[in-house]
Length: 347
Image 1 (cartoon, rainbow, N blue to C red):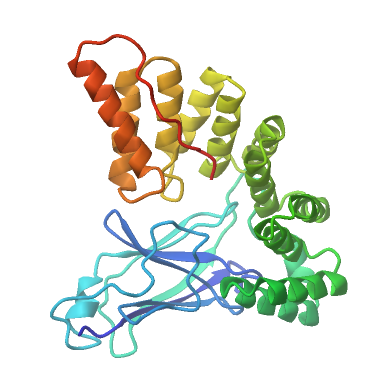
Image 2: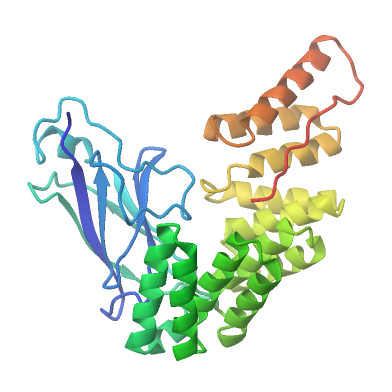
């Protein structure tokens, strides 16, 4: 049995203050994301590999997380071979509105693990939006504690209790944008879409430059087939931060549903050209767009790209079936349109 490997560190604002909301911290080795966790209320994080499930796993931040079962063959010491295998891996913090942070692990550490040090978040020049709300800097301590309890229950899938804590948080501080956003996500999980929409809109109303509720609202609108609204909301996100690939993906999916194929292709390529580890289905969407344009060569390229990035993803079976159909028609010299299965491309 291999011993666990710990990677520890802290994320702070460039003022030296703790980040007022949890942020995602990922550990990547080569092209693989090993794990994504979130920071605690004081900005600290600990990534544990090979030690079983963690309570701070951030399942919303990545669809390629390892929940602690990764083993290191031949590692018989917590500060020996296993730690050495982490050398060259990178700790990454990506927060909308802030410069991306990357720390390459160059020290094998000791029995306490590998210390990634303190990472400072700095605002990106020329970007109006942020994934950290200014309202979170003004939250009373009692409301903040309710929010933290709610997040903990939400991660544990105790939604009823999480909802109670979030409702207490906004009752104590009505302008708590982050809590309103979380309330909306809980409502959406409970299939109360109208209540979810109202919560997201409330979060936007109290902090118009806070990006997460726009993202939540755009996903909700896409899911409920409000395609014009989804495209409009995605456009607002890109106005706040043009680098958010998920917004480009939503815009592309909405335009595709509205048969605006050229616009959809442009937005989907914008999403594809940026980091898209959490949305590999952008390749499925591009395949759908190219198939609609009868460009089956590029549709095939995109299907293969999806299967390479997400071989066990939710669209893998449909992608394989569509590839077989394209290849069968091509081998037969049939120039007619392949009958492609159209998987749902919404997030």
